[in-house]
Image 1 (cartoon, rainbow, N blue to C red):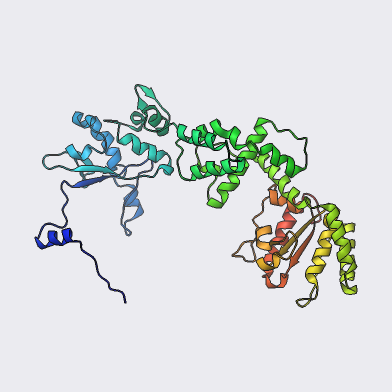
Image 2: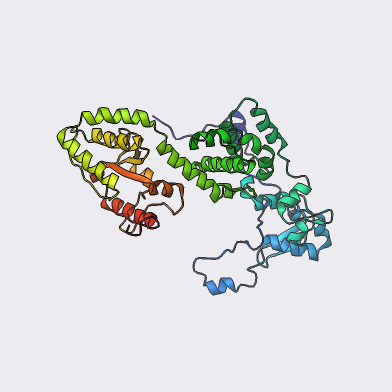
Length: 431
């Protein structure tokens, strides 16, 4: 049994027994809102006409903007920061103006903003230090020097660290960690908003993050003599960081001034996807094919020969193989795959379910391989764009084997058909 009750410690019980105040706020706290230029909020009731809201005379008179105006009007306000404003002034909501306080006392509290929010975080840092600004430009001015962003102004005032400790941490880790581990460390620090200037950290440590770039590119492209220049190593590293950020719902675009993985990087990625399908040992595939073909039944061999003839003649076609469980369908798929892979061709093995895909050599689910939408209708297409790595892979395939196809909705096949016609029209005008 569970009791819906609350435990009261002895000190709290004594406080209540003596009848002392339980809730008391002295002095009162004034919550101070702020916003970036042109982003002030507008509060209105649900039934307020839009015209009345837009034409309201005080619509642009926010608490924050009126602080600038108060600094122009009252000399004593110029000696206060935004958080100190309620100690000497009162915000009157009816007329939306700051007025000198005649009695009482209040403490100002500026709303919290997490570091990852960007400019508005740096604006909040300045509000706790700058006294008497009359505009946003005054907030970004330090010792007579006008800066172009709140972030630069924070650096000039020494409000933000220089990230040296993070650079030192990556340099120290490079003595024992591999390149991929260093990239994961860099991504972890990015996601935790630890960097004040991610681009500066990148410039300081990119050579450590990319120290295994040449090895991976040589292996993926099967070119042992390949030599990468610095720009190519940077592109490879940025692409790997982008891939690590993608499952976390982030991108390099979300971090100001960070270089991006450009189109040339994606060309390298498309080669890598193709190389993954071409990295099979051809001799081993040939031996496996000979063993499998020798064990085919007459019915299996008939299907096998017809599909291989169709692929060799490049005539295209659709074949539907039906059979009960245990009749050797997966055995036939393995024979077809090993024959084409022994020749250096690409076979895409997919299945409608995850368990079935594990039985296919190099198998994937159809949704994963072809980016088929989960919520699908008759107008749906696969999420594959022209020139993307997956599009390049699909262009070069020779055969698609789709296991357990009947359990999929017909819209899935129609979506794939429309997508493939779009991708292949540049290669085959009749597609």
